[in-house]
Length: 476
Image (cartoon, rainbow, N blue to C red; front, side):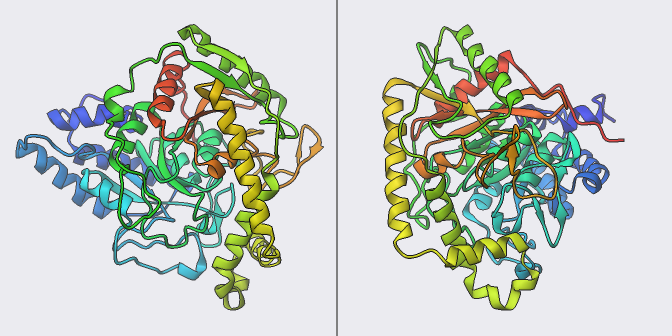
């Protein structure tokens, strides 16, 4: 049949798949069938897919191959490429649970706009990926489908809330995964699982309908992939204005994929290990991140440490998060309390207890923190931090309570991600090394607002000198 090894096909980049489908060296149907076979083998261990849609995938793959055979002038950008959709995002006719017993049997009547764009681009939808209930925490488990463990250590978390998405691409169960991020939910699982995840600028990818997108002015949709160029490919399809989302940004008239290999000149990179307030960082993470940052000097770019002064946004962010969840879920609390995640119930009740004055105070802090980042970007083109303060933590908890033996609060392990949901800046997590226990470590690359292309170019340059894709999880 075909000369290529099946595993090689499963771990192939979407860009390479695209070319092979275009020439029909491999058909979309062949690729899809091989990946379905892998999902059937690996998913019982990893639980990345909660609702597979294999018959839909076969149908879509067949249509993609027909488009090629018709010799249409130009096939859609993702023609025939297998893709997953997070279970917080509606897909017409496919069960979408939001990870909650409340919506265990809910079947949407329309596609989210991002799903419509992916379908229009010719992708093959393999299924829905697992998420915590309403995406409320940074670890992926829920009362319907259970937990998604880490591909590198099944006793650790895959992160969240896009844990199923990140685990799927790292395990070769599809090259592209759609994720969403309200406080780090693309970047945490990308970091913990060893994938590349990009949180675009707020509004770059429209969100509609906004069903249970609780973090209304924080949440964004973006790609989780194995290769940086695949993030550009996917983002080219997902981005652009949509009238139904009042926050959506105008078209930036850029094709990221066309420019991703260009290396910017004379970049100034600032890095911070605390953003001026982070309490503690795991010693292995710190060591690997500092070593990785200085790799950028090989491109002639200037690298130096940034000293932040100013406000700690942790309490303000927690206020936004808890109050939003509280008022969004209050109507369900009485009837569904016993069938909600117990930690979520605690958070909802906490959110309902905040006084009205807490939100203006939180907004004031949010603005002050934005200005601290704005000032730093006067002097630097790119800001680098660790993605998380720790490697993947134990399965079954929402957050570690200690780092290096020091007590930390609920956001202590993730002090570097949520601030950029507050500010709206684009930020990516890229694998940069490993702990002694063979867990991935992530580097966060933050750009000025609307500068996704620069982040992608810097990420691609880093990928070229420190590739990670050759290392694959092994399951016995």
